Image 1 (cartoon, helix red, strand yellow):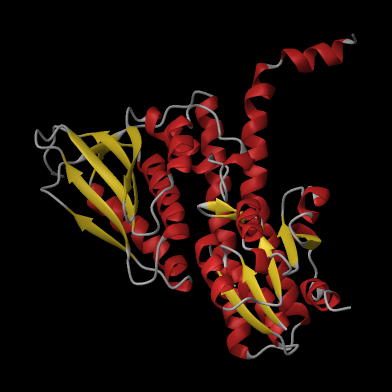
Image 2 (cartoon, rainbow over the protein chains, first blue to last red):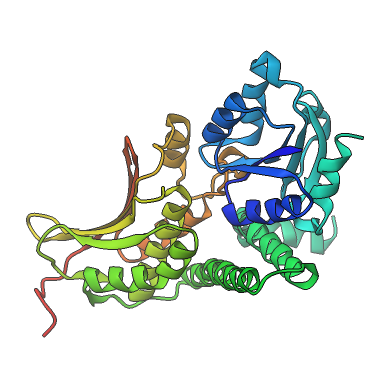
Length: 118
Length: 244
């Protein structure tokens, strides 16, 4: 699967990518909302893994923006956050799973991505 | 109401410290989570020696960055206790060189650069070295988040024409600050900004920098550029023109 990681911290994104690439998934990283939108527009991924706190914008605003592009609303989104997340609010934005960054274990992101297809 | 309950309500210090505590917890959560995940990767992963070295370096740099924040919070607490920090004539250039040298490993590991630029003949600044260094570390750390590859973050020192004020700014060449965030930054007064309102930041760094600056009779400010931002501290200049 082609996975877009949206995280302002490149080192954090590297960890997710390493895990996904070791399991034959393709990984692309965007460090801010603007480059994420451009990447999604040019080459839509199969899954988006999104950190809710981004510089210059925030994850919710990005989800809102994506929802305005009709053909992109079907891309499943996995949220990773260190803050409390209102899951019910996010469901309307195509969010299929939320993960807590502070308790994340190795394999959790991979499992969440692979669960999208099942 | 029992006496314990009323005592808690009457404690002004508790009311003041709670937003700080919350903001500090927020700022430390992400780096601690990252350190935990990188350590876990080291324990469980089948990694090359190069990957192991990279992860170890990142763990060290992330820890150092978090420790700087913890040290600043401790310093801030000493200000609450009205501890005085002695002021002395300092070379702004020397302080900037020092900060840039210490931040270079973190910048390099994140594929960014930091350098010092002097804009005019230097007056000495009246400051406390520990507080001034902390302010510049806060500004540089913030700039690192927004810096772009190939455009170094600059520590720029200037003296006013009348040589009465010295300013040190940290300039990043990243995306412009949006009007929305700009308004919120301008509103960040004596309290930390509510966490959820400023993406990626609690405003704690700016709050700490402002407190440290005020303790030295200095001011801090922000200049919004089309291609980034400058965070600056403006200090009184010493009448002494150079070190003897």
